[in-house]
Figure 1 (tube, rainbow, N blue to C red):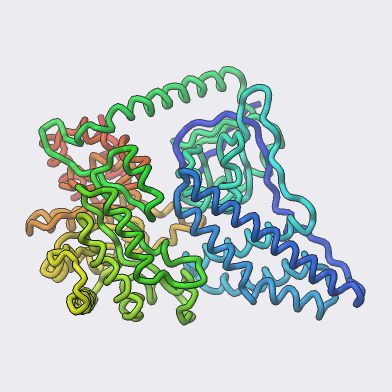
Figure 2 (figure 1 turned 180 degrees about the horizontal axis):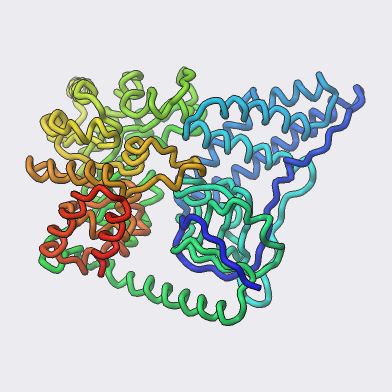
Length: 576
């Protein structure tokens, strides 16, 4: 008999296929003693496993770079490579093998549990994500040690794909699935910003997460339907249900093909208001996607992906080349480059690390940059040098204080003075803007409006900080709500303040690329949306159907509501 399970929809689309269960072999390793004379061989067995996994990760990184995958995937793989070199993990396991005369896989799991316990004592979303990377790296090592590489089943004769069902999936695992006939992902844990969600969206594979005990409820090779738009998983559907979802899938595919016709259409509302649809990127390799949808420019270039997961920091010339490449590829379009948004949770090799009990509230983003002025000055010099090649704008992340802007502007002037001495050209009228990501900034906009040329609302962090929700924690992820009245008041207030003072405002968080919120944001007065390139045409379709004269008064009434259920109902009615 068919039955239905509901989870969190994180990647749109419909998939019909057969279950392939991905197990966690590492949780069931045996413990046995190793004779003293064989201990060197046991250590060498661990060394060989580490070398094998390093080779796998290098291959996966190359696959991520060569394909159309979201470049965050490459950063995740880099982070797992760093885990392999962490002395608290592999080096400590080697010592444990010798000291306890035990087998390599048991030593690894014991050391992993010690490391995970340390992370569990720090209730922080970023460190918890890093904990997941530790677990996933050890799982890969144990699979190699046990001789269980976890091959996928061959393509099926019935033409249906494979549905991966797992407790959780690492970025490396999901990228490894790319060249197989994978229909979708289903996991016990996870949320909208989990690794599985990010990779599934980048690969355009339907996914539902947060199903808790899905691995215990399905069997290998069982038929499954995933509705990644509604968050529904149907187990063992009958032929009538399968046909219904085949028809829905065909309709979705037809809609997607129609969207491609909008590529060269200007995003203009029914009453003639132009809207800018910009792209979020992580580097030059994303340019093909930007051009494929004819984006109006780049609204967010995340420069931290030049810094994370490498043995040395990028020097000024390397940064300059990366920025110049993007600017020259989009000569007539604006490119907004965010200064690096890193913290103690995101390791930068070559920089002195410091322990923080709560990095999300600690030395991160602009605070980190100002604490490392020489590193920051190097980036600012590279940005200024690149500014002559296009329409560059600099954006400062996570502002909360006026002195953070003042210090940044002084460093920019210092960089200009150095370049003047060296007779290196730059754009002297370069615009500098800031991100509104914390409630303090949204509630005290005057000090930013007086100092900056534009603002960009980072909704992911703004929602997290406003609601005190760790968006990576499945226990509270259901409370992460973009339609909470407090969140909407902060977003709407920022957009309206920008309009009053003639300061451009954009939204560059997940809300900008979600068609469920397009009409709401338009009605608030937003005219600059920045999102993953793959979402631009769908948002453009929403813009083309919008009548702002009719929308604006309805949205203003929504902003006065203080009941979430009423807000949600009113937002749904906007499209009616």
